[in-house]
Length: 505
Image (cartoon, rainbow, N blue to C red; front, side, top):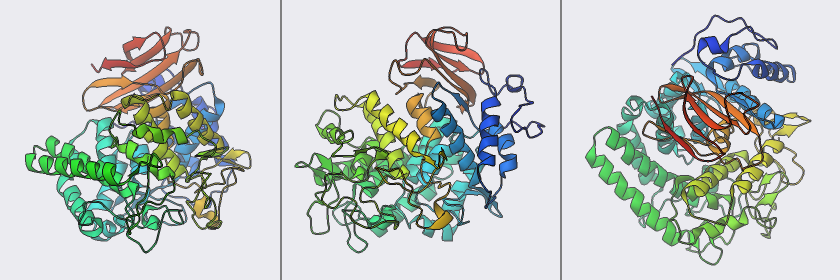
């Protein structure tokens, strides 16, 4: 669904009746306009792609859900990350693509899954349709796709859960199957597990890693598990029973192998296993990734790994979740400014960990972690995305000072290598995408923290959703509690900040 409105660009004042346009039911675009003007003024626009800074408000007010909450820093960061994401949209002779860093015009596949997760909330999905075709249809691009481990298939299925449109997904089934088989030919050992160099996991200079040894890593094996499950589900949508059964079997086999071979009982953690069969004996943030795809079994003790998240000797630091446990003797020993994953904070990994933690809190029985742990990590992520007192997203940062490592000049400026809006939408606010027309809202915002929030203009399954939390009804004057609107009409409400489900009209 597109909203093509004849609007003159506004910088601070908004000459646009959003409610009349039918996009937004509760919020207007005044804050977005003000924030966009501020972001435009705070930088020299040294790289301009499809949508310039001057055009950014006009584009954003048509393309993104609006968001409001009592925490101004969170609200500002939400709009900043969309404003930054827009910078990476390019139009090539073959269609639209998204770059990873502005100083390199060609896309890079390492964060493709993150870009699809973020972009699935845009109102115009033609951008992502083209971007997917870029990676799967062009032979040169397909080779570049295999330069880095990827959860592409999984991300595409997660996108379908938002759009509800199976046609573009089913059309890619043969390409996805061929791509999976290529990964098997390139990276699967005779024991059934996948190997990868840390640099090709986009996690170079790690404690456990190597650029020469065929290490078995929780990363690529979790990705391939998620991809296999996704292909099986896509095959069912296509009515292809053969592929569905084949890839169900691949996923089940890989899950068993990961649990038996990559879980270190002594460390209570998923770890890299070296080519010689030994564990790395290093807890690294990548050990949380299996939960991103719900690979670990429930109630089997695997959740003990999450006790390390908030431990200051584990992964908790002043400016984020560290990429290796802080107690390890090799923590932060691999140098500075060369893409080290030996402890510094990477938004790429933070996004994965928060996705994984959201799954644990919603779908697993555990007392090891709580919503407060999620929200504390999320707020730290918000605070860390600043430089010189201004919003900023770079490549990686020091865990104790918050200083960004920009060892490669402007490459790390507006780095499109992580998610943020998706974490707000699916995590804090709690819209859980599903296959059916039941809308599930399961907020990870702890009770008693915010008295209100609103997420407005969310395109979902062909409808426009609004999610409103108003503790006492005084903010939006639409009643107390958590309410869900579809196309402007209330379809569900609960009195407290709790799970809400309602059926689309």
